[in-house]
Amino acid sequence: MSGFSDAALEKKLAELNNSQQSIQTLSLWLIHHRKHHASIVKIWLKEFTKAKDSRKLTFIYLVNDVIQNSRKKGPEFRDQFGPILGPALKLMGQAVNDENTQKRLERILNIWGDRNMFDSKQISEFRKSLELCFKRRFDNGEPPVKMSRRDRGETLENVKENREQEDPDKNKKERRKSECNEVIQFDKEGKKEVHITLSPKLPANDAPEPEELIKALQTLENAASSDGIVRKKITELPSEVSDVSLLSKISDQTQAEALTCKVNEAVELLNDYNGRLLKEMEDRKSVTKMLHEFTAAQKELLIQAEERLQVWNMMIYVV
Picture 1: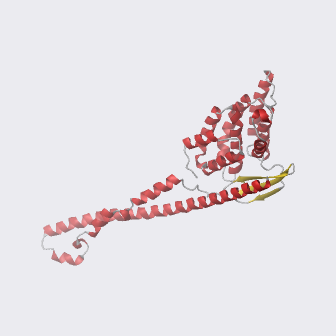
Picture 2: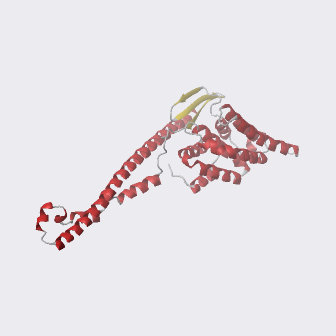
C-alpha cells in the first residue's frame, strides 16, 4: 500500500468518484494511515470546500465509510471529524437544493445516531446545520428540485451504490462476518446483490511505511559490522597492546610511555567499535520487528484483495 503524504491524499481525493469501489478503496487507504488522522481531516475539509457541489455528497460518503469501518480500531477519525462536520454539513446544505440529496444526508445522520457514531448532541447539531440551510433556501423562494436520474447523470448502478454507502446493512438476507471483512448478500427485485466492506485487522501499532523500512535498512548498510576500515585497523593493532608477555621486553620509560599511548589508542578504538556494535544489535532487532509487522500487514492486505476479487467474480456470475 502506497505511503502517505499530503500531495498523495489530495490527488486521491481529486480522483474520488461516486462508485462504491472508489470510496471503499480510499477509505481502506485512510484507515491504514490513521496515524495521520489530523492531516487527513484537515486536507479532507480543504478539498471538500473546493469541490463542486455535485461531488460534495461523495466526500460525505467517504467520511461515513471511514468512521464506520475504523471505530473498532480507535476513535481518532470520529474525534477529528466531529468538530468539522457541522460546518461541512452547513456548507453542504447551502449548496444542495434537491430532495434526493437532502434525504440521503438525513439518512446518514439517522445511521450515525442509531449506531452511536456520534453522541445525540452532535447529531442534533449536524441536523440543525442542515435544516437551517434548507429552511433558509426554501424561505427565499428556492423550492427543492426533483431531479431525475437522467438529469443527474446517474446510472442504476450508482443509485444502488449510493444506498449501500449510506447503510450497507439494509435489506440484508445473509451476512457473514470475519475479523477481516464483512460480506452482505441480499435479494432485491429478484436479483442477488453482494456488498463487501473491507476492515483489515492491522496491528495495534501501525505497520511501518515502505519509506521508513527502506531508511532503516539503509542505516544498517553503514553499521559497525560493515565498516571495513575500522575492522582493518583492529586487525592491524600491534601485538604488544594485547600480549602481556611482551611487557618484559620494555627496558626504559620511553618504551613504556610509547606502549601506554598505543594501548590507550587501541582501547578508544575498541570501545567506540563495541558501542557501535551494541547499537547495531538494537537496530537489527528493531528492523526485524519492522519487517515482521510490514510482512504481516502485506499478507493481510493480500488476503483482503483476494477476498474482494472473489466477491467481484461472484457478482459477475450473479449479474
